[in-house]
Length: 422
Image (cartoon, helix red, strand yellow):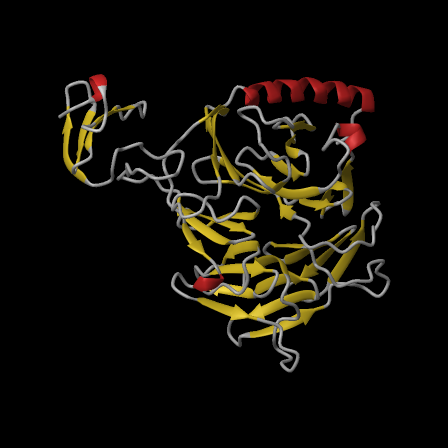
């Protein structure tokens, strides 16, 4: 994974410019209107700041917050809290990450250690994840991921590999320093399709090979990576095997074939770029679209055609509007087995169905993507030979809508000139 520094910089600059130029030509699109279900404290969630979301093998949705763990069955939330008098309660209410092992046990990274939840007994057990010589004095478990045999625990700069069946544990120290600071959000860890473990930290990106038992670090001065900020905020492997990397300076992509990291967005507010560069979460949905959760500009969806980005759609917050998200600060994104997208914000969780809808709704609202009808009470509808819809409102007038472009004309007795009807 190494090239000479000058050669690597030259290659990265060329690829980065090409990639940024492609994305700068991406247009903002209205896309298919999505309706979001909102879940807040009033609906039963233990706390509004949603840090992580996962679905288990039984279909339950697990939601980790800064104050409690939640299990959602589609109707109600069951909440789990730390109880000092209960030895079988969770060890901390602050949940950084959630994983499930092949036996169906739920593993939790918290501010007070690694927890294992046994569904049969309903008990939580604190599992040791530090050896006696660990350089890390605290119990913060920032990120976890499970495979067929092991739990991989990210406590930068240490990776711990715990064998689920035998309980044996190995720890590996990266050359990054322990910075001694405790953080409120986790550090991501993923296992890619080749079995490599990718780890994020506040000091950079690293990849651990379990077979060779060694780290490869990606430093910003060698890879022109993340500008002057080395904080890795999210990781995801796309359907091409590329590693998508969220930072405080936008999204980047690592191509395993070229061994290059390229920025996917520039730092400005031009159309086709993120209006906020801190990326908290990245996923790819079942259609191939990339979703990006940001610190202050909501969620962006990138649509591709023949592997080229052709459109970007943003979903933002807005008071009293149904098809918007709860807040523009988005910590986590997750797609469940029914192709529902879950969005964790600082004001609760949102859910929307990503499957193609057979019915499209045309409704006047404050949402910028809505249809500008004179009114929502529809008295009559007619489609002419050109495909335009003539929509009569009850007592408000006439609308002529071009469904292809979204353009609409209004006629009313309240108007003057050629738009007047008696």
